[in-house]
Image (spheres, rainbow, N blue to C red):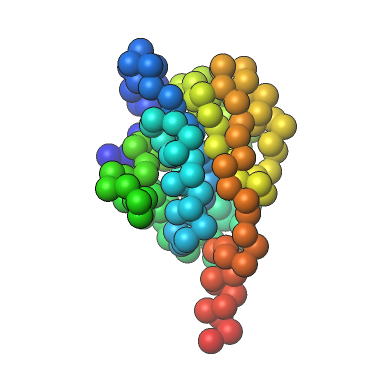
Length: 166
């Protein structure tokens, strides 16, 4: 089951009351690859509960270009939800949020942060708008943490480009 910002809020409220350390990660996760998995496993290690918000297909087209995403949002959410750590038997991702098409402005990010109130907003080193994201995390009592160094050798774009040259 995938959640919306509205449906995840009461779950997060309950988890906070149980004193769980919530970690939030956001992204496209198109063609889930080894660097995505490393990032998600490291994000999970930063707390007790990992909540991953997956961007919409429309946002992927706008930000990544024509022909993207390769996989539709529902499949990307399914892949993210099935992500497991090699060293741990349990899933790395506890909850997946499907973000809508208009998740493209400060107020949208604010509504996500308000609903989840993560203690950690996990990002990789190449994440855009870190200053704004850090501000929002701190506004709701958390902090932005770079949990993974970006590896330019492995990306969805690199995978697509290498397949087009075969």
